Length: 134
Image 1 (cartoon, rainbow, N blue to C red):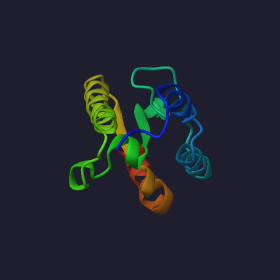
Image 2: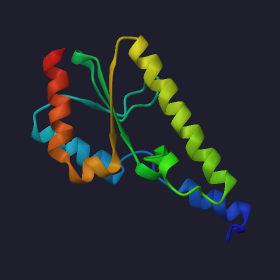
Image 3: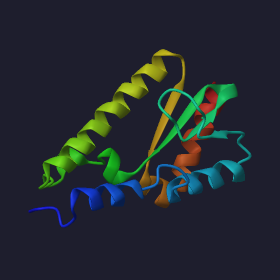
């Protein structure tokens, strides 16, 4: 199936997809604030995490289900090679970033979009447990 957009239009459409202040990032920010957890949002550091709790050396990533490949290998294969390559590259990059940050002494927490939206208590409990163990 051919793309319905020209390469220029596809580029424009893709440029409109936000990487910051997404719905799940805002929901995570609200959860952290409600639980009085001091954090920094979008710190300028390796891996571009969504949140960091510097005093405890905890990094939080909020991963979109589609873009970061939730159950990617269980799903029907995407018809367009472009999308397969894009998502698989994102997944490899996520693993590489997580490994490096952990080697550098950070605790890395990754939350899926659907968990942030539907299992907020589970997410905040994971963060709280990690804070208490550090």
